[in-house]
Amino acid sequence: MRGVRGVFALASDGLEMFNNDVEILQKSAGTVDQVFSTQVRSWDAQFKNFRNTLQDLGIELGTKILPIITDVINRGIRPFVQSLRDMPTEQLVVWSVPWQHSH
Image (cartoon, rainbow, N blue to C red; front, side, top):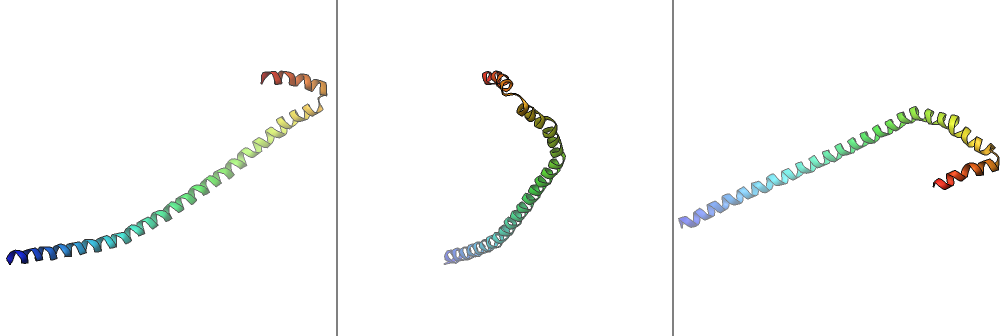
């Protein structure tokens, strides 16, 4: 009889410990959900910050580089294209022949 009582006592203590563990896990699951939710919000905020930083960088680069590109086009490329347009056809054909052979 004593042995049976001892087994039941151990079993009931084990069951109580199991129930306590389940309760702890249930509470921690809520904590895990909260941590995950916080991390996701944090990730979203960091990604938005990153995207805004890239956008700001693009705007800054654009305002600094665009005038240079515009100047190169206006002073170099546009006159070159215009000189090709103004060139007599015979001269343009002679000029383009070496170009065709090099490719």
